[in-house]
Amino acid sequence: MKLSDAKRLFFGLRAENRVEVCEEHVIGAHPERAYTVDEVISLIRASGIFQDSTDPKYLGERFYWRTKDVTENDVRLVIEFDEDEDGQLILVVSAGERQ
Image 1 (spheres, rainbow, N blue to C red):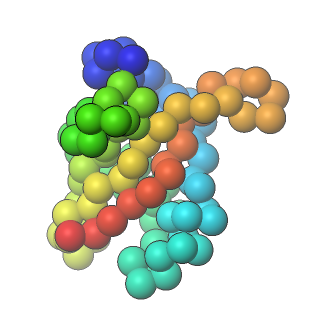
Image 2 (cartoon, rainbow, N blue to C red; image 1 turned 45 degrees about the vertical axis):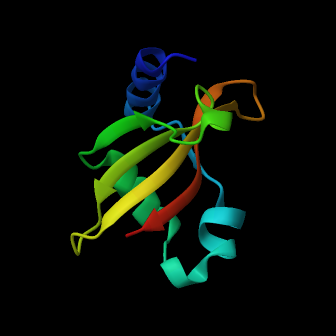
């Protein structure tokens, strides 16, 4: 997927609140990062920069949402697109890190 198409999709799905957090990974696998689902949703809604992945193997499949948390730490969330159980398109936060 081209970055421009993914960006349009991201902002459209975000506006429709069609966001899913992969809790098993984002929350459970990295408790040291101290994310909550509510915080991740807030970070998705915050101002930021939407970019393509820097990993060549995931170009056009995974994207980054870069923003800042409430304490001004840089945050990078990994965004993917998938379908929910009803076959509707959603954006998925599959990973995240604070820097």
